[in-house]
Length: 169
Length: 106
Image (cartoon, rainbow over all chains, first blue to last red; front, side, top):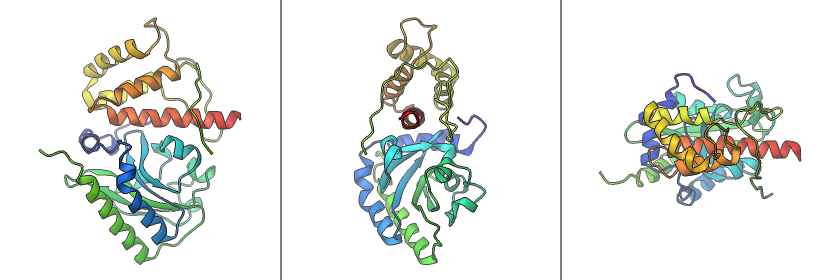
């Protein structure tokens, strides 16, 4: 586990995730149509809303995820592509993970066969990064500007739905 | 393929092998306390943990907790609004370890 100072450990960010109740399993139902639309629009097998927690990513909604990752609904944080999206607070694109310095050593690449990825940070109305709206697949893939714009659109749609869950002040 | 989390009586204070290739070790009691402390402060984390350990842990306070007991502790902590984020993260790491260990030994 990571113990060094890390922006992803920020108390207020984690409190925002808790306030929006993003670890509630009912979110999968709330966002299922959006992740399905993302996978279909970008013609990739996997689409997820990955909530970036302090030590793990949690798949609040997922499409096309199988095996142990579907059972655990997440992975350790240090393996995740979405940690980079969350830290950067900007879109993170990996066309070929085996050639990307940030992720090539991740077990998700070496052992699980993840090869391409595009993730858009999901940022709350209070400015906290909640996680990443992302697509992924087992083959190298070049993302067109149109595909990335569609991913941004769907990420905004998903984030808006999460904001609707915020308790009234 | 449907997966089930299998019970095991491993303890967290003794050295445990990592999952080959993944190099993933099981999360420890100390990891969870540190994560709790980030949310509620060290003193509150320790006080909370004392109660949770009494509820979920071994009868003897000095005995290490099994992975099953740690899982139960994380489930209990996930019910507390201020601690559900670190509790969920801990559970994902623990379940990942158990799943991958079972796959490796299958």
